[in-house]
Image (cartoon, rainbow, N blue to C red; front, side):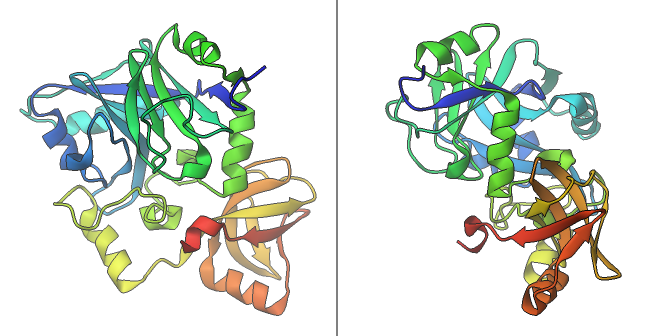
Length: 301
């Protein structure tokens, strides 16, 4: 039984990339959507890697651990991430390596940061823990905490601190209920734009940092208000549509289904069409299912 009212799940779908070397931070600063100058042992970040045209490639959490910068990323796509970073490395004094065999990622939720004295309650607050790092999720405090911990002792350290083991699916339900995207399950590689994935609302992009790959188009969308599609939570009545299922408003296609579980999903929807459907009291459909868009509270904060 949990002593704190809090649960943890090991996220085996996540891997860890380590960047080391004198120019690791400077290199990353020119690559990703977040201001790496903000990174410290007490501050974690969430950001993305884009194509030069501003299209989504990868997203990840960034922490400082000793002499390394660690990226908590999608494990199935880790080779692609390393390859893309290495293409820009040139002669920079940085080494980039897969360290998933050394580190494991966990999500913790249900009781706040109380078990970690000194850990703040703001997105991205971080501190060293058991040879790794624990952080308040940089996107949204309602998502709880994340930890990057040494293998194989990470689970034991969390259980010893009073956390109850849960399944990765339990964390996925929390994420879906909050309407938060999960990497390439929801963002389409080389097709989606960051702002379609709510990166601004979820602290994943800085508009006042220096240049990075894909910055120009991202800034243009922001300042010209040209985000026409948005990832959004949908409540599902009927069979859960498969990812990629077209979403219809009458006979008109207005979006596409992305990830989901049971009666909750994430869909990429045309913003104007959602407003039209809500104003007219019309339902969206995907296959045999009826979908109701739900705007999360954080989207209007």
